Image (cartoon, rainbow, N blue to C red; front, side):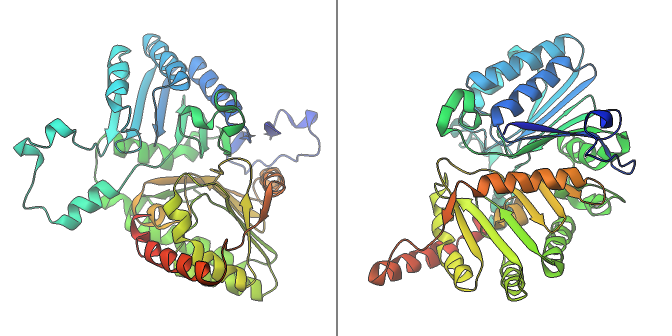
Amino acid sequence: MGEQRIMNDQDLSAKKNLSPNVLSPWREVLFFSQSHEFFTSAIDSVRRAEHSVDLEVYILTWDALTEILLSELGQAVTRGVAVRVILDGIGSLNDQDVLEQEFLKRKIPFLIYQPVPKLRELFHKENWNFKAPVSFVLGRYNRRDHKKTLLVDNQFLFIGSQNWTHVHSEFLNKEKAWKDFAVKLEVRRLAVLRLARLHFDWIWQKKKFRRWDRFYRLPGSVFRIYNARRSRVMNYREVAMKIHKATHRIYIVSPYFLPKRRILRSLTKAVRRGLDVQILIPGLSDVPIVKLASLGMLHNLCKRGVQVLEYQGRILHSKYLLIDDWAKLGSFNFNHRSLLHDLEIEVVFSADDEPAAIERIHEEWVNDRMRTKPWHLPARGLERFLLLMLSSLAFRLRYFL
């Protein structure tokens, strides 16, 4: 399916079935079902950048894809473009030394969020603070920057589930490439990006998020940021309320589905109201303990009428939600990590502002669903009992999952 354009103003004549909406914050919306096309478009935007490039990513590995990206970023720096790169200290830990050398060689400004001390540095006295409580240390290193965004010239914004690694590319990893979903947004008004730009600046300047609550929901914002307590609570309540008020459909796509109990209760109540409630999870997971921890929960949801589907063929990594005529996609997983710890970002669409975007997301759901089979607990008798016991034990670790 690849990519599909959704045009608003000057392109209306070419697509008369898509009505313009002057209230829409976007001049153009471009969805990507194939990660290779997403990477191609993103690198092309960096190549055309004139003023600034801000990249924020959870996992960055040194491979053929990243080599092309850093080459283009280095050339952008040479042209005088203001480039900033933020990568996570744990997500990008494996190739961190090589990446640091490549960034320095190309003179690309970069920041490692919450870096983990290297083995040789663990024995340095200054890296140990014996006065700090264990909960603070665990909380600090348990909070990761899970966002995946690229902002070019404060005009083109890429948001999705792709990390910059070859496992997501169909061109490099062929049929084993992970299944992702992303969007490229061309803004109509610069003010639309205020929340996303503000959050990037705070991380870059190493500010604490204690005062972030005043910015957590700017008027008319189309973004949902997870970083401070209030923003997390309000975004979580928003989803729960949308589920509670839903009238006909609730579709959730999450590679790591391990939500809090309030969401589970809301989903079962929606089924009793006669709604179409479906959850799409990966058949093959890259984090097996999360799949194990969710077995008992998924079993209970199935018994209460929720349709749980397993994606077949390759690892599902898409992250989006469709409730009636309201949808959002980004880096957020329906698990405790995203809700309580990690920094996340999502973009929200509604039928009032972007009816074509809602149709496109529903089309993505239909195509994803065609590659699924119904989920069921893969055991019976004593084997099922033991599996549920293991799932219960793993579920107790959900705070870190």
